[in-house]
Amino acid sequence: MTRKALGRGLSALIPSTVSSFSAGGHPTDGGIVKVPIEQIRPNHLQPRRHFDPESLSELAASIQQHGLAQPIVVSYDVATRSYELIAGERRWRASQLTGAKEIEVVVRQPKDDRHRMALTLIENLQRTDLNPIEVALGYLRLMKEFGINQTELGTEVGKSKSTISNTLRLLELAEEIQKAIQFGQVCEGHGRALLTITDPNLRHAVFKKVLEEKLSVRDTESLAKQVESGELPTEAKSKSKKPAPPKPADLRALEESIQISLGMKVVIRANKNPSKGAIILHYFSFDDFEKLVNILKK
Image (cartoon, rainbow, N blue to C red):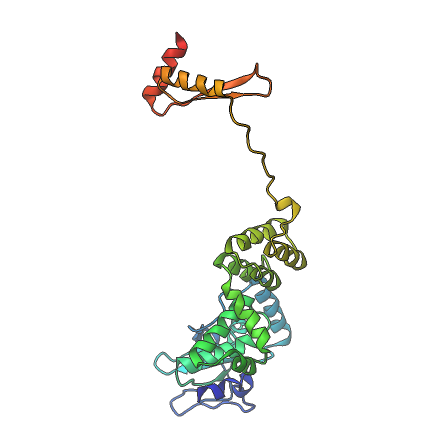
């Protein structure tokens, strides 16, 4: 069953022997060879969506100084005489930045896209530089494609079931919050704290507060706990307004009288000092406005 091949990981892809070429000049399966870097194209099943330029520059500097610590893994396309990445796109991109013309690769021939995706995902998920949302999407894709549960997935990628579960739950967050995690505006801890708020509107409000005030994970956890228990922090509580006292009968009668005379809505607002206040005249068309102006001019 395909599932058995998943846990072999990257170590199963990289043999210790040097690869040879067939009589037709095609690289054989397995082993390490050097190939022109421009003949390699990205993996169309790559789970990674974002490559940090600064991180790539740092990796390029390391490769330039120390060389490539681990070859990338590719497949060979006989029809186009080119290679497609299976694993190691960051190393490939960073090597390009160094100006390298060739790069060490391990040539493997996946049976199909399903097999290729498994190799790619597992290699990437075992690295530390994927953002949490990319990891969660990778986990979900593996589970769906290979029909495995969280416990089995944890065995394949070397993680506990609770770790897998907590990471997958990040996908329950709104897209806006997921993007904030992807681009480092908030971290995975913030996301987990926000997940404790069941009301989506309250969750979004707290998320905005986290961004605006740059709250720490601990502060976010505390705020989420208060919100979920109904004990909003003092500054978040809306100030209760005392209902306005009923308008005196004589003022209401005067409003109605003026409204009948002018043929438009009239509101009289009296201050606490009865000798002061305001009369508001509402118009709802240009004709009403002109009529009102003419009356006031008389």
